[in-house]
Length: 49
Image (cartoon, rainbow, N blue to C red; front, side, top):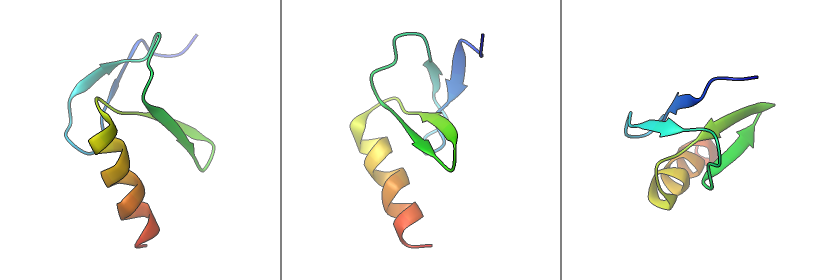
């Protein structure tokens, strides 16, 4: 079983992973977000690489 909390890579907020609704899988790693705005920001930053 994985960790029950993760850190939002955009804002640094602690996010509960159990039952999380806002997350994505990037390069085989699941990344959790506190809100849709952080998810969109993260994806935008990845697209500019």
